Amino acid sequence: MPRILIVDDHPIFRVGMEELLNQEEDFSVCAVAADIHSARQALLKTSPDLAIVDISLAHENGLDLVKEITAEVNCIPVLVLSMHDESVWAERAIRSGAKGYVMKKEASETIILAIRNILNGKIHVSTNMMSSLLDKFHKHPDGHGATTAEMLTDREFEVFRLIGQGLSTRKISERMNLGIKTIGTYRDRIKQKLCLKNATELTHRAFLWTEKESFGKYSGDENDQTAPPSNKFPTDF
Image (cartoon, rainbow, N blue to C red):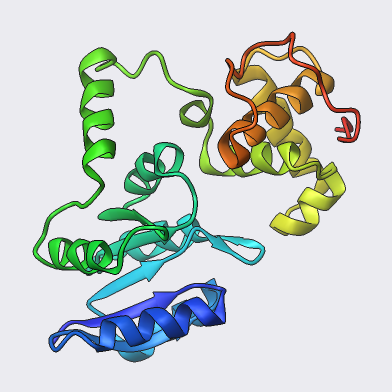
């Protein structure tokens, strides 16, 4: 019987997911964890056959755990189950080593199907996401034409998102548990990759992207510099 580890920082979701999986006669939840540290301990103690990992783990990035798990010689498959838009995060999760990506808004049957597919050695993403990935490959097989999210590393992308949420460099360093100088270096790299001249342009771009990705309030081109910037966001380095 496959043993499953659930890693999510929301207690209600962990309980609900555990109940859902334990209702399946051939599944067994061997452990639950709220953060990367407790997930590491559970991996060592329970030896699961599959891990379900959320991207947002309090002040941690679940993709760091995905990379850690899949870097092992005898790695177990990972399903990323998250509220974040698959059009932005699914490919990034797969590149990090995950075998599947499902959004939390999907029906429970979809989650069960994803788990079964992954345990059978398949990669699972939605039909729309698979079509998007194949279309992108055919149009840009050499990797050119990448979006903002695809141009940045996971760490750079996390900094970019937090800038868009209005966090200052100091707050970002506290959130990511990294030095202020390190965050400054990431900001410089982001500006270079996105061809942004200064901190104001970086903040503006990040804000527009966050609005578009999280709320759908901005439906235009994220590169459009004519959209009104918000002066409530810090532009410090």
